[in-house]
Amino acid sequence: MSKRKHDPLAAVLDQDNRPEEASASAVRTTQVPPVAAPEKPDRQASRVNKVNVSAYLDPSYKRTLRRLAAEEDTTVQALIQEGLDLLFTKKGY
Image (cartoon, rainbow, N blue to C red; front, side, top):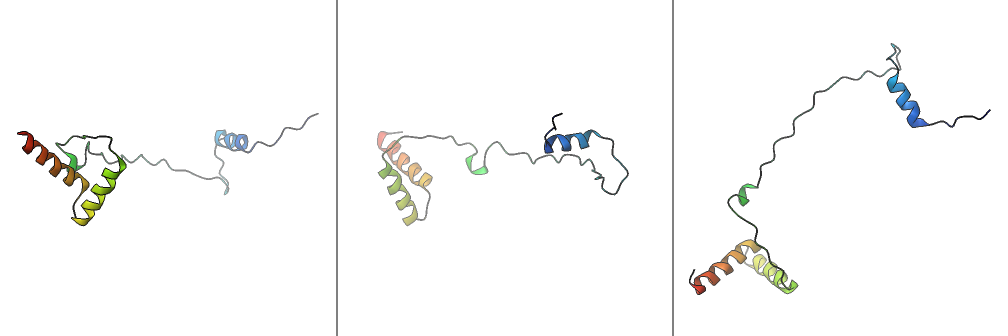
């Protein structure tokens, strides 16, 4: 006769399928209604009415932009926008 190995998972599942006993060791659970997650806005407020424009550039551009942004207490995004504004003005747009 072979012995069955003790399977902790099966033991727990078997306990879940048994009717709840009125003993002190029985754990009573209460059904808690699910809490609705707060709705996420489609975009951050700072990105409303804006689009992403990207380019693959040499890493030195990134380093220089970050350094310049820190020195001028501004953002890389503001510097890029300023640069594009100058380019558009130069080209007549």
